[in-house]
Length: 463
Image 1: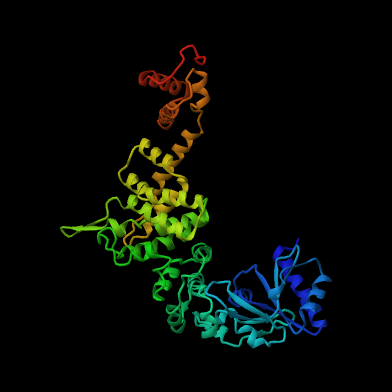
Image 2: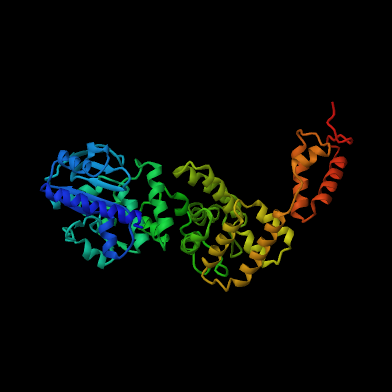
């Protein structure tokens, strides 16, 4: 059975044959060509059709299936049931400061080199003939990839789209390439203030979720002088000192970058990879405002609490996802607890309370592991990991047992009201302590009587 990717590539070949019969030529463009040369998988099939009119291309596509024309004014077509971007060569001219503020002029006879000129980086400007496999490389993209270098194609066109600054950084992280100094220099002069937040988040997520070393995204943004506007909280960690005993790796920025790269090794095991990687980024934000030096000793007491508001303002700048905010703020607040409790050999009640506070206990333990290995003197973690996993299994066992619920209290005669939640909270404490349900119900009812909460001793509701 052919894969969806094979299906798209086969259709690209059929389109190219019909285009050739009509007097045109079809190329794979963009990331597909780049990743083909690098030996990397890429499921995005983008083709560009030269040498025939839009009307002829439309007729070719209609002979192959149902055509989608939502982007036809920009020279972009599609086929239903296929994920192929079918574009015609075009010129783009900036008419505003936003990412989408471009005037587009479709010109199927513009010529191959001029068509490639609008691409962002040399490694993305190569074109591969769909039928022959010939690669056209007008700007040295193959050589730049051999040098592991990200270099812009053209000064004028590069300046017209500020998103390319972030694209350069995320490509650097994903491919572990270096940005050319001339591209960095140009990027330092560009303003990112007119970019939409969702575009920032999109590029950040590519680095956080696809790169082996997400830290390179931030390191390159730092080198380009582009952290301040969208990433002031991470930037504030630069130069913030840490105890050399516990953090010989250096300042909080260095530690955070190391944690990001450690977290990238674990993100595939998490329930919420995007939130997990964001948590690795935000976990020590509070140190920027909590760090003090007294008698030569460096400490950041309470940074896990002060970091909550800083993480919130960072997230709200780039995202409006409630799930993300709830998860990241919770992980930021609790990130120190697993290793602290393990180090102290804390009892099961303490670890169960911690897991109960967590939105995702399994991910919390993975963040604690990344935090540990983000230190320059990280020791073997196997004993700590065994301890925490055993405690998590115990907590999960407690949560799987029958427990006192609201309906149990109602059946016992407790009247729902303003104090009902207090009774349920007490019952939950019994559950965390491992008290069997019958005994927990008895103790909860005794607690209610002692606190003089509303209860009908006959087991029926009061009139």
